Image 1 (cartoon, rainbow, N blue to C red):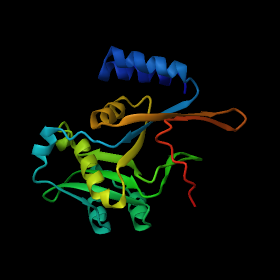
Image 2 (cartoon, rainbow, N blue to C red):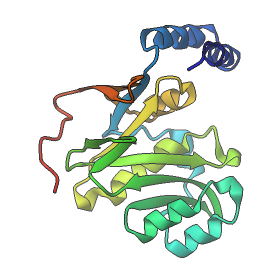
Image 3 (tube, rainbow, N blue to C red):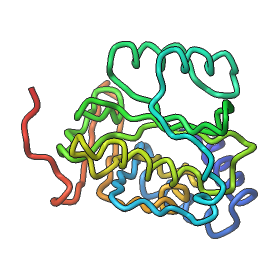
Length: 220
C-alpha cells in the first residue's frame, strides 16, 4: 500500500469514527506494514437486539429460491450479481432473505463448503458444526435496528437440523464498520491471518487460530 493511501485511510477513520479509531488503524498498519491482516471470527450465540425483534415481528426469513434471487437482482441497490445466482445454481451457497412483505430488507449468504475461501490460494478447513457466513446486506431504509444480528439468529435456527451451531467470518483489520458490526452481533475472535506478497513472486502467510476452533478432520 502506498503511503498516500495509508494516510488517506487514517484520515477517513478519524472523520467517520473518531481519533481513537484512527490511532488504532495507524498502529495496526505500522505493525503489519506490507501485509494483509484478516481477523477471523466465530459466532455461536448471536445477540438478538430487542429493537430488532420488535421491528421484524412481521418479517419473513427464508432461504431464497433462484426465481426470487433473479427477481431481486434486477434492482442494483440489492447487490445481487450473476455470480451469486450461479453459485446458488451450482449448490455452492445459500442466501437467507429478510422480507418485509415483498420488499427485501436484507440478506445473509452462507457458503456450503467446509473449506472457507479466505484469499486467493488460501482456504480454511472449518469444523463440522460451523458454516461460513461470507456476505450480508441491509437496505438503507432498515439500518440501525440491528437486523444483521437478527438474521444470524435465523440462520442458526434454520441450519440447526444440519448440526450447524456456529457461523464463521473474517474482516480486514482496516474495515472499522465491519469490525464493529461483528462485535455487535456477538462474534468472538478465533484467530488471525497475515498474508504478505514477496518481491520474488512468492506468498508468505502466517495463521494463528484458537485450538478449540481448529478442525482436524481431513476433507476429501
